Image 1: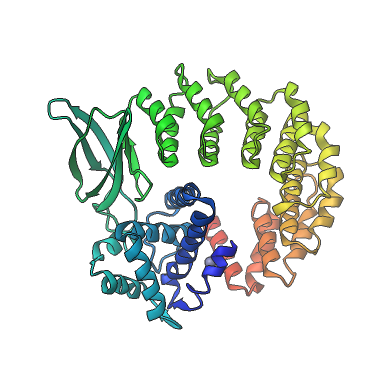
Image 2 (image 1 turned 90 degrees about the vertical axis):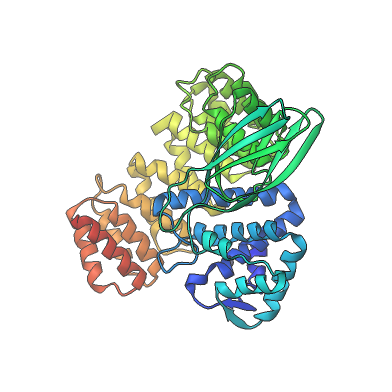
Length: 496
Ligand SMILES: [Zn+2]
């Protein structure tokens, strides 16, 4: 965060984008430099993990909004500007190499010092410094949208000693997305040997042949995560387990692990996954595999007991993010014998672990958890996670005894975050106490537009005629453009 804001001194203050459409020249650059700071201080894996997460977020965002170019006058989003901007700069870095890339960045800063820039100025600087024409790159990654979806099939030709990869691009084509040209690395390895090959995939259906020492035990596609793409690579379970254990790029270990979660019912597969979660050298692998396992239904899987044992072992992991996942995993068992563990975790040094334990106890004890939850209404914590957990259970159980306290929290106070959670909680009481609508309608008249927006959102969740009427009135007097737009959207939806 600090690195990001500091980077804005160059990308934002010293060199400034000309308009919102070119926002990535500020935010993508600052995000990329923040990742470079991580690379320098925390190492290559953390740098790569941030890129991996940015790709995940971009996929999620695109699923909701649809393919959108990074430079666009359409509605754009954080994932498509900040994260994607940083991914794009990394791809250029990979393409040009260290020396040229940093020369470009230096020249770009010098040339446009104290001036405003558009994307083409950056492109022209690359061409001036390197002599490399990146027209195709900008067309596909900045003015186009989507990403390549690769389908890879591997075969081994013993006669010639060649490993053959057929790589097809199977993404849906539209006006924003065609066939991609993608430089990336493929790593082949076997017993005591390995070989890294850089390829440039330029067509929809490519056959690549590599003469290697022996039939490889591992073919790691997009090794190093230098290209944004999805990969479907047909591999046997044994090959995937081998990759999960031996790939030296953790993003490829995650990739293999994900395929294996779907096969975890097989004997041995879950054991391999559990071993990876316990012993992988990078915490990002553990986090991601646990997130994958969080989707399985613990009541129906054959490895129910083994997964429980895994979660129990992780309760004392050094990383709070792992302990929190372990607590959340255990809470899905609804097992009363785990109660003492959750009580103990209320004393964890991490707020997130504590909130997870509170949530687990609320699910186990239901109404009996009310006194504990009430106690938590008074606790402050990072991003308000403790109070938010308490509010969420107390309001969904409609505990009337908590209402006076929630009303107090919804009053004007020091923290908008706390108020926000309390105001949203108030709206859930409407069935038992219709007068909470009056509280919300009072908040609608406050001077801060942020809290007015929260009150509107809370009212929007209530399906009653009086809530509807209040919003209708608000539409007449509300002057803040963002809130006006929000109200317009609500009423447009209502009409449909
Ligand atoms: Zn920023």
